[in-house]
Length: 338
Image 1: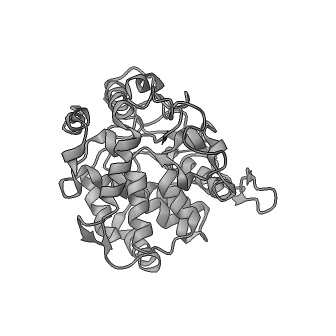
Image 2: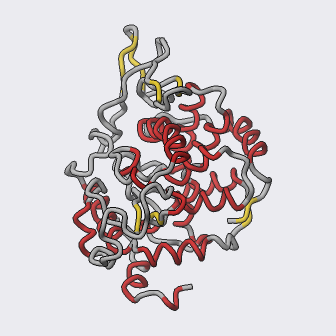
Image 3: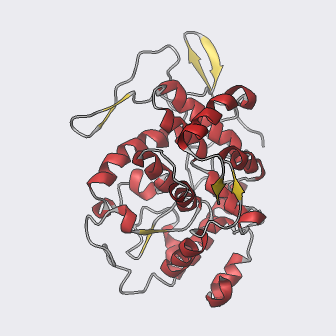
């Protein structure tokens, strides 16, 4: 696979990022102090509008509901990429490498290689357990093993959307593609696995975090790629857009090619949950089609749990495991090709 790669990409792939006290968020409800709980730590929308296409911001009356925490477990604002800290320095270095080396041609080759699904054969739960070995260097809010975050997110959504079992499972598996960091999956460097994603083949929007480093990307001065639409047409649909390679696209390929019965909204969440320029800043919406617009509503609901459920509260894995195993059996084959 690598014999035709540009030398700078080979060098970059060989790089690994070398990379106090944790604060527990608490809130006072009816005179009692509670640690950050598994509803994600914020007041959440309870319904999705079926009429006007807008996510309804209706909050169910609950003594347990409380406003989103303003700081993460490092004592800083969520997704604050300017906070002065040692972790901030490593996160910025991560994005420098990511923005330099994620090119259109690189992503095309990675998609072709990993779509073969010829590396490992295992179940969804086996993959969940593998994530105990993974820590995401791009995340300024979290330094715990990924399995903790998966269960926190899934349990948070389960409490507020008890009837949407597909969404519970989507939350559990949305980050499984991070196994790309492990030897059996190619041991890719962090910049090729995690972090916010963005389109290739068109201009880099300024909403992308640490945008300044794109100036060193070979695509930056390519006249075919540096206009708003680039090689795409307005309304072409995100399925036709090349997005930077990482765990999102890999897990989407695994789920789709193994015949999952998750609804399209679930696959959309898996594939674009790291596409923050879109679902947080509204960038690149001109490339979306009507189906993307519908699926985006669910992604925006999911994102609140994905972000704010990153806490130090532990989930009893053995207690919830039977429930998630039943969902895996419902929506996936027993063994998947990875």
